[in-house]
Length: 341
Ligand SMILES: [Zn+2]
Ligand SMILES: [Zn+2]
Image (cartoon, rainbow, N blue to C red):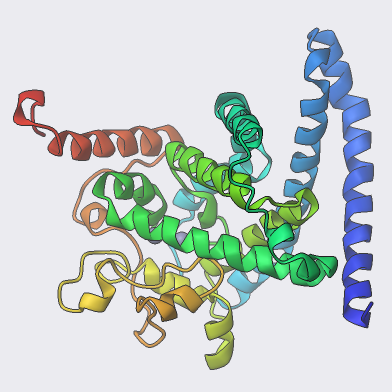
């Protein structure tokens, strides 16, 4: 094994030991007694897994905050009168990253995916397992990780394009874009329905390509940390080469630009629905003609909101108004007998 591979394995081991110890402690001292008192010990296995995601998420938030908050204070990109709207994003981050969204998915949609997986296996369908397809590559943990990284990111790029392409879908994704004060907390500001769609999309993909659980944990945590960085309110540059290798804060911020990054643009056919849709890699934008590295940064937000439409201040208002807008768009596609908004 090369030096890098053994270093990678050692770091992975240290982190998983730390999380594992904390998981055991929290489970034994808090979760298990609570389940026992509520007579819900049948959920013990699930609760043990959920405790893991809770600890890993808390650790991730702590690291991200410790690194990015000083940068935001030291070299802010925008200065704000107040940070009220950022506070809602903190709630979004806690809900997403401490595992609550994952739990909701587990109870609502996971059973359907499990049944589908069993059915596919029974009929010998969809055995396109990446590890079987390129067996040699996965013997090396770093290479295996990189392959998953690229494949999942490619899938993520197209999911994001569709969020902008379909008007009803955009109304959900607009919850993310309506934040005008982008900060390290802004990444998780999403519509819950959109999050369920996203989870289903990746669950379906996992059925087809198979994802090794250990790799999946690492991918999730790394991807979340990088996306927090992309939204941070700070002047940092990846350099000309760096921003072509990995999505930089500048690159993603331009995607949030009002009237530029994410709206219909008839002047430039190559950028039909805006620019810079990449999640972690800008390569797909470069490949499919949606990359923009040159336009200067502009204010971020949604044009309709800037012009006065209410997108909600609090969590529930933002969620509810997203559904209302989506319903309005869906009714537009129906015959007139259903009434048009
Ligand atoms: Zn977007
Ligand atoms: Zn964003």
